[in-house]
Length: 122
Image (cartoon, rainbow, N blue to C red; front, side, top):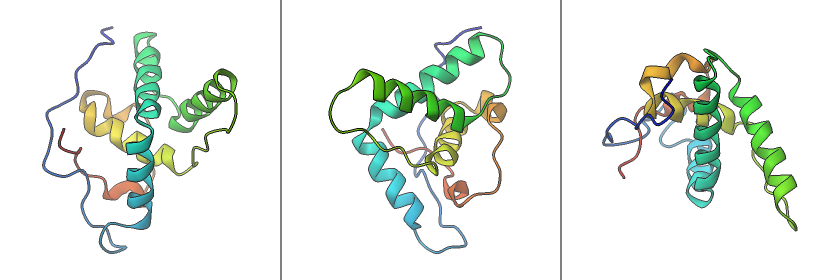
């Protein structure tokens, strides 16, 4: 299976307002984290594509973040990076936006992260 799948074209906005009001706290926190740590998204994307290339049809976004945590902890010295457990919902939705052909790779339960509708402009 091809693991060099290009993301879809950019949409106008990556989020829409949810029933919790405009740009929920979850969105703000995730956006700030994602902008500061683009390497976490790249690791998430790479590990997911590797699983798909090995024939997996479903996996846990939380499991992938645990692998990333382990890799960060064992490859760096000094202060550790905290990856919020809530980010698994955000990363699985970001994955579904960038890779709609594999949108169902992660099971997505109803979440505040459901406000994420489209990916950001690049």
